[in-house]
Image 1 (cartoon, rainbow, N blue to C red):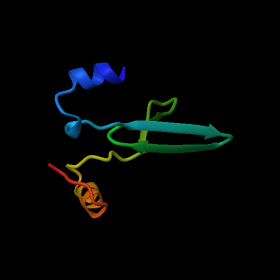
Image 2 (cartoon, helix red, strand yellow):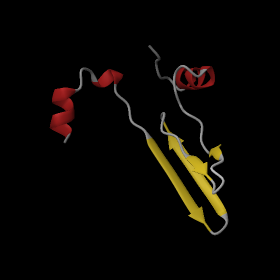
Image 3 (cartoon, rainbow, N blue to C red):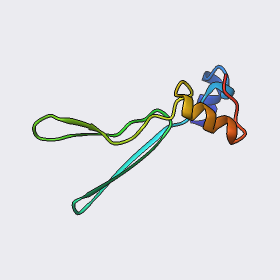
Image 4 (cartoon, rainbow, N blue to C red):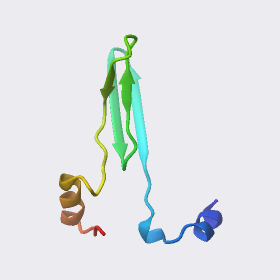
Length: 74
């Protein structure tokens, strides 16, 4: 897989990763995410609740966080 990605991705500098995790324990829901993966909850009445926030460079607070951590944004 590693070789396939290396051969088919234009530049690893422009690549990233995402992760989204939700844990239901009893009557509590725990959610975490990294990148622009998103967790949502849909109840029986089809009401949607967003559980996480996207980590994207076009979100100003994320851009500032990345730069403050020594990262770069293009």
